[in-house]
Image 1 (cartoon, rainbow, N blue to C red):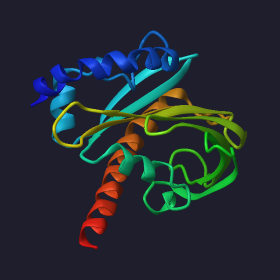
Image 2: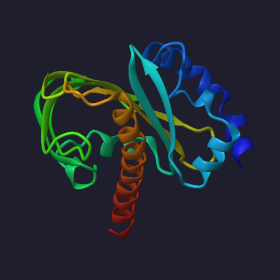
Image 3: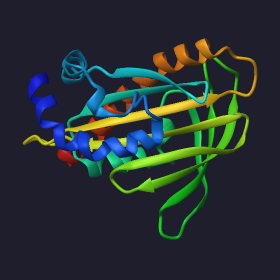
Length: 212
């Protein structure tokens, strides 16, 4: 199964490689499916989330990937639903759209988050830029964090069934003295939880639509 998925991924990896190069730098770690090993594919096929860590501009950049057996459109609708995101996203207490482009290409969003490793409450605003059905790039605008940037990516696999490789890569500078090693460890722990929560939410919505 893993070898078959990896073999069939050649075209997908070729299409996303330039994007990953720009986003992550020459190391390519975190979001590029072409860096996944056979063991990574076995874990993904078994339902696990795979985590990769890299350094970018002297900050830890952590990426997680998971396979979601649903269509891109269904996953996308869940990913960009700010209003309902706190219902399933770990640590997220509030998500509010402050402003948006008339053509829907970007939104200014405010998050209130309870990071277990940082502070009782963190509030910040970021700009989310959308390429429909493909990616969400986000970067800090204001708030408690000094830096925040990252991307969600959706990579449909060339298989008979709907199956999408979902990636999430993020770099955070809290703005107070938190050692990079603790930030990295916290992200490595929290990102798989986020990816599993997203997949579970997509499955819930799918089952609800089937039952109705």
